[in-house]
Length: 491
Image 1: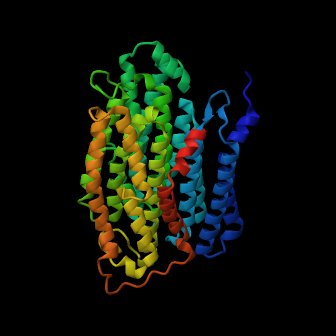
Image 2: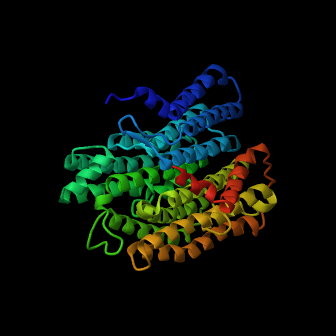
Image 3: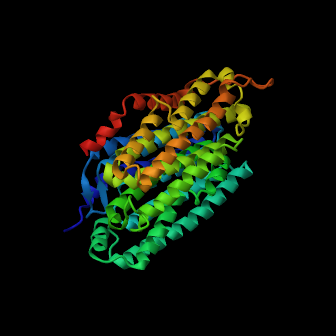
């Protein structure tokens, strides 16, 4: 059958919109922005980038559930559609916060690289072939390395970019080596054919080596212990908008692509929930990562005085819950996992947005003391931060509570209390109380502590709009979670 290039072009219109948007941002800045003030250039670049993201979202919705495209290289099901829309929403919120943050020296280039990263995320969501998965991950990853080290005025940003690049390069090597072993064992790079080959043949020892390497790469993308070492330094050193994109859209796309890889291509070698040691597979490996992430992330966050590092260790703890969602996604469905990661992303983008706004007005926002008295200096920012952190903690009726509840309910329904996934769920529920404590430490600084004597009022007007939108979405999705969940029933 001849490949349908016209259908492929329609399917990739969102990605093309982002690429052309990136080129337009750079071209406009070169032609008209060089003589303008830096803040005006930033606003123009953010506006053009936002238009490109909105146009890409429209193309995603118009294409809808098209199924397999171009011989099965791409597949557009409910997971692909919702992940692409979720990634674009998180990228759009990140772009919208840029004018309120400390202006970078090259705003057009920054927005262009952000759009290239988003392009990689979109391809990751629909990729059904190992080669395309790797290319999409690397497009997104290389862009994120640049974004992490973009602030040339701060040595911490350069350190963050370098560490992220070194760890990411190693993870890419593991992923590519694992994929090459899979190809050698199955003779195919397409997920359905890999699944059929694995079910027909025996499990060779090299297959478990391949699984281990793929799980290592996934652990890096999810910032799961013990592959988390890059996360605290990157979250602390990267520009706030870069850290927000890394913590939100990158997680959403990464979880989607690996959930598809594990359950569409490697489901036959997953093992069992009841006796993982008797039937080893990637479920056992993910269970080990999930348990380590839950314990290390939540307990290490207690010792942090840096808000950014606290959010990083919090992200490691949340990665444990995401891994539980990936483990049961093939049995309970991917809707709970998607809902959880999306709401986590909204709260994280908002939290880093607040940090960035305070940093711009005060020159610093790293320690808990830098947020002292925020409710007096800016009630809007303090109220938004309250919503974000309580959602991350899983306090009802915010969306974070229903995200955790849906993942935990699905896990217990699939595995039961006596299974490995059931034990992980109970551990995650117990550690939620620990997470609530360290989130309350941040809120105590913002809402209870007195502001420093030399502090001034933080005036935010339209710049706070994306932060208010993110907080509003957490409230709306918490009240109406079916708005998101029912889309997976349609697809």
